[in-house]
Amino acid sequence: MKDKNVWQLIYDCLHKDIPVVLLIVVESDGSTPGRVGFKMAVTEEGTLLGTIGGGAIEHRFVNQAEMKLKNQDFFALCQRQIHHQQATTNRSGMICGGMQTVVIYPCQPQKDLITIKRLTQAIDNQEQGILKISPSGISFTSHQQNAANYQFKFQAENEWQYEENVGLISTAYIIGGGHVGLALSRILAMLDFYIVVLDERAEINTFQNNTDANEKLITAFHQIEQHIPDGEQNYVFIMTPNHRADEVVLRQLLAKKLGYLGMMGSASKVDEIIQHLQKDGISSEQLQCLHAPIGLPIRSHTPTEIAISIAAEIISIKNS
Image (cartoon, rainbow, N blue to C red):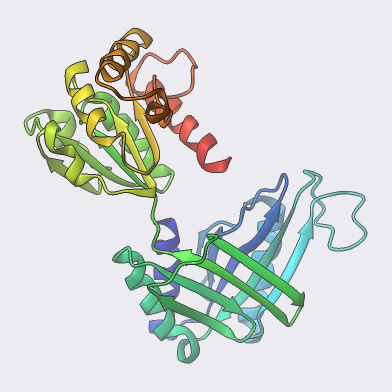
């Protein structure tokens, strides 16, 4: 959704005939502040939105973008930056040891407006597609996906192509709208998740007051399965008000192909539920997908601490 904000700003500028430059990290390796897919918009009016990693390297690229806007230079650049003192070329001045390649792409109303409008609409509708950026321009092909989310091919400074899958938004399904569900919604929203909270208790204030949730669904816990689609981009967090409801939900979801399936609770509660499942013929192999107790073991106690431990586990899984 942060990407959506960047693309929306670019579209709004082009629609008003205001020049704007897209900065995008198209390649990264090792320790580096910017990761593949990081994006930033730099407008003629001085507005900056998004990030390509921050710090001195971002400042340098923003300055280059501003110079392109000032000089009305619409030629796209692709620059590799190596963060190592021993680098003989493309040395960034940083010493963190990695590298990143950034494209500076000046967007033009007559050339790019229609494509970027289609792109923002696809993101809004979670419509899958492939974004392509090259020296010749930006294109978007709907209803297709590459095997890898990001691809970059470089032959020369004027011969390169970046491709990115669009429309696969990481979605958090938080089953249980209590205090931990509220805290987890807040933190995962900052990590750019689309948040869906599900509960059968419409009256609880933590559910009603959850302003970070994109969707709030009232449904019986024994009907949860119909609301959780398969998909590696889907992350499910079971945190209902009691262990019986947790087990009811878990039984419905074990067969699904998910990016993450976690259940909150003490080790003893988790063991008891697993024993029930195994007695009913569910194998250890089927239970391997379950993360329980949920979160990293950081001795968390408060709802916010528990939510942070869960978010840390998700970050570790997503970045592995």
